[in-house]
Image (cartoon, rainbow, N blue to C red; front, side, top):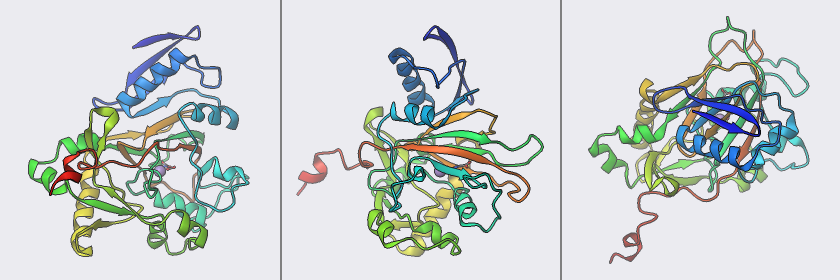
Length: 311
Ligand code: OGA
Ligand code: MN
C-alpha cells in the first residue's frame, strides 16, 4: 500500500503472511503529520512489528518518536539521573564503544534476551511496545544475531479446544530477579529493585480490549517459569511446553537487521528473543526505548461481570 504524507510517499510491505511489515520512504527524524502517524498506528495494530528502513536518528529523534506513542517506561534502577533510564543499551559493547568480554554482566543481560520474552512483563502494568534502533549490525558473513518474533495471537488460535479450556484459568508468575537465576554471575538485584518490581502474576491467556477481546498467550521464558496454582514441577513442565510451542515456524518472523533499521514491536501480543552469534568476534549494538503500557493485562474472567457476581 502506498501513502502520501508530508509530501513524502511511503510504502508498507508485509514481511510474512501473518505479521510483520517494513515501511519504506519515511523519514522519522522529520516532523510526522497526524495523518501519517495515524497510518503508522494502523500498520502497527495490524502487523505487530514494523521496521522503518533507512533511518538516521539521533537520541532526540528516537525519543520524540517514542513519546508520540505514550509515556516512556523507566527502568527499575534507583539512579534515574542518567540517560541509562531512557535508552537501554542492547549491545555487547559499552556506551563508550568498548567491545565487552562474554562474561561482562552487560553481555550476560544480552544472553538473558535469548529466551522468549516480552519486555518488562515483570511489571504489574506490562509495557506497550519497544522501539529499537540499530547502531552496529553484524557483517553479512556472521551467523545469527537476528531478533525473532512469535505471534501469540496466532499461537492461541492454534491451540486445541482442550488446551484453550485448560489454560483459561491459569496465571504465570513473572519476576525481574529471574534473569539472575539463569545467570548467577549477574550482580544481585538491589533492595530498591526488589521493592520496585516484586513478582507479579499475569493471566496466561490475555484478553485484548482493543481487539474486540481477542485472546493471546501471554508468558515469558526469561522472567519466570512458575504457573500459579500448579505444583512447581507441573507448572515448569507446562512452561517448557509453551517455550517449545512458541518456536513453531508458523508463528514466527525472524528479523535480520540492516543498517539504519528502526524496529518497533508490540509487547502485548508478541514474544521475541535474540539468536546466538559469536559475541567474542563481532560487535552488535542497538539503542532501545520502551513505551509504557496503559493498564494491567486482562484475563478471560477480568471483564465478565458474572465472574464477580456468581454465588
Ligand atoms: C531487547 C531484546 C533482542 C535482540 O532489547 O529487549 O530482547 O535481538 N533484544 O537483541
Ligand atoms: Mn526484549
